[in-house]
Length: 380
Ligand code: GMT
Image (cartoon, rainbow, N blue to C red; front, side):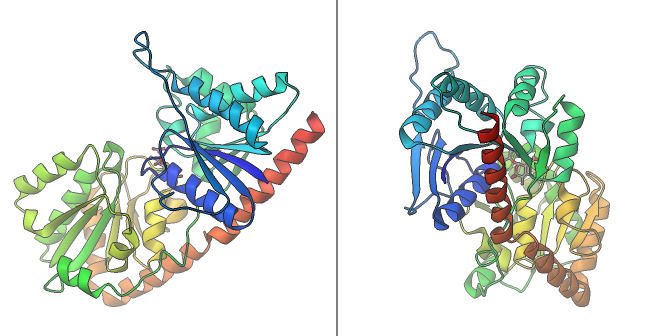
């Protein structure tokens, strides 16, 4: 198939999922056209069958806010017309599903129907999308898509609860490359980060408020208080980085905390991690947790959103109520001081990650594309 993929280019999970999906589909012989306002972080090298198209936005003195959604719709029209797309798959509803709707209507006027698949990722539903300033347009655009998927059962439920959507939503979970994300020897890195054989607690995120980085630091501080020799590795960067640095200074624990900044090969850090923390305030899936589990790392998460669909309490790690630092620190101490428990959770984590094998999940997308395409051919 000739498939258009629209996504955000930044380090966020939806862009990662969209780009990795494109790479696998391209590898299987499909032709992929990725459309975004910058080159996606995971599209670092040349890939056969993948073509990257940048949305160019002309500014004009009148525009305080350049109309990105319109520029995107225009580019979509060009792609559909000149690259002969069979289907357009947009990741994150806002504004991608709206631009796609507009592009599809323009093409329909020209007698060509190209089906749109919208994948809901998280805050496009749970936060920004349901904000009154966007809600009606988001609701309309999702409902007008030819196929809709959500990355978890939780997100599907949230969508139906918050929007008047009649479309059937298919849950296709996020997926993992089990070959890339597996525990490997990282002797040098381990020596550098834990020179005295300390336990390594890891958190990876974009340091947005929703990720609760200050809670990660509180959990770590409590773990140290309990006498555990440990180091905290924080990979990623974002708005809460300064807050986190200040918090370490205030608590006097800076010497035990490594701020790694944005880190491409997170699997190297995960390979030497003893524990992964993801105490997010909102998470439709929690791709970072899945990446850790795939590297055989037990996870302590909050028990909200789609996280319990990934991290199974008592099996692959533990899930605690939101912001319950004591609960999370207690489990951290238990895992780090009981080798047999750690080994069981680590083994189970990898086993669970195998259920999200990219080979099987991407097949679900292909099947869904075929269904949507044949349905829309019948309708037109
Ligand atoms: O929804 C967002 O906040 C953005 C999005 C992203 O681009 O990072 O994250 C969401 O999509 C990821 C991939 O499907 C999920 O793993 C994340 O859980 C989800 N984030 C939230 O729900 C906060």
